Image 1 (cartoon, rainbow over the protein chains, first blue to last red):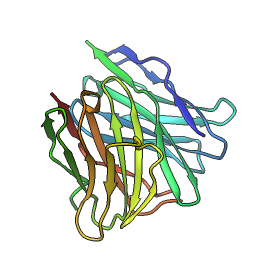
Image 2: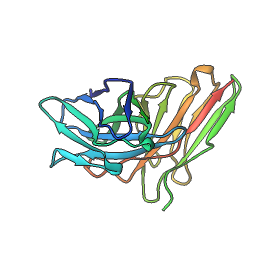
Image 3: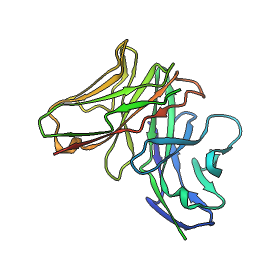
Image 4: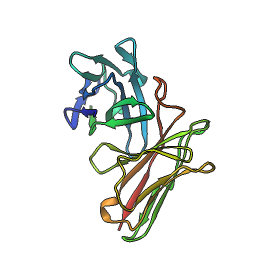
Length: 115
Length: 116
């Protein structure tokens, strides 16, 4: 079975500061990894995903994440935070086994951006 | 191309009533997933359906919950005899296929169920 751990349920950064949201996963087979963002009372929007190939993936809104197999990590970063980045961020892993394919989510990290 | 459409956005039910949540997948998508998000928690997988088939219902509570995805029409998540603990946001996602790297799931905006 696969699982996702997001360290830090709340992260606060100043506007313009580096954003680092941590995600570690466990999976018995090569995973597909995702970061989603959720704004208040909204659905989930895909920020970026890793499937195969280049381990550094770039997403929307200036976010990127690096897949590190040796560390079983997929941390999300953004060089300079903007007020509009305040939201909840979810890391997820997907494992395809035959006909089954489902996402397993972490518990989320709420990002606060201050002036 | 409309996204995943869920309705209603908000649903209030009294204890013991039935709740029906609808999900229309994106055009061309034949795979539907339902997830539940309890307050201050992440999303938990409930069920995965293809047209007229339940593929994986390992996340569904054993009683009162059911799901379908008929040949025509939206997918329905049905909760019978709702209890306060059913209060949550229910999200539907759809994808065009599974088992491939590009089988990305797109999410609807969710239905927020409140049981009073």
